[in-house]
Image 1 (cartoon, rainbow, N blue to C red):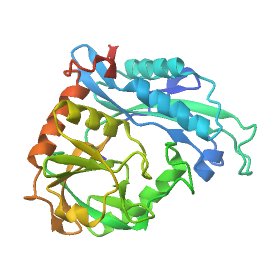
Image 2: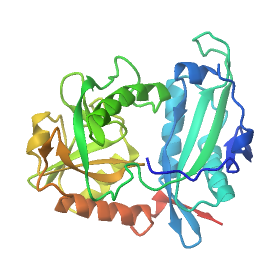
Image 3: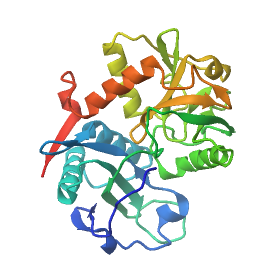
Image 4: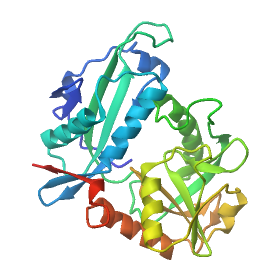
Length: 310
């Protein structure tokens, strides 16, 4: 991830109150720190002439609440209150281009694993943000197919965006980076393509976009849904199905997508050049349309933008 200019003076929304980040005190034995029992969202906000535009905030807050429901966490706030908390925090920090991290955790420092009856705290942090890969996003990245397999729903709830799930991503991306790659591609337990460490994946073949289906072991990303929607509006055919590993090597184009990654072209997988080794034509078109959409220039989806003025 690119360098952060986050300051101890930045304001954090913590259980309904804005306080300086430096004043947030959490014991080291906190349940969610020890056991990974937190849930979170990653949301982007983009500069506007009057402040900042938060992208698809309603959908993110809905998923945040769904994650809480899956793990039996009573956040104590409804969707509208959480929506307002994000708007308030972005406005208080006056950061036009930022990454927003709502986070709910078991705020209890007893050792027992059970979360029954334990306090839940909710925070919203706003972080200045540039690029997850620290490079020109259209330059392209190199990926390694991981030896680690993707978690599936018989092990943990895949559709909950939970802290502990990302240990799976950590071991996979660490393996790839040790070998000199930028990112990893993780296979499902049955050997099909799943996703990156924190992104969904699309292949382009014969002019069609192909991505793992809703019944696969992937997080149904909000950026993924955005890409599917705008691609269809651009008259591209989008196919949701299982993808074999060898299809990666024969793809015309590949890109990863996510809130942090946006649209990131993949130019190499396992040392095999993809296409001509640079961002492909369709990937570039999708990326351009995505940029216009998140910046509020796509008039078909004004409801995807939540404006914050400051």
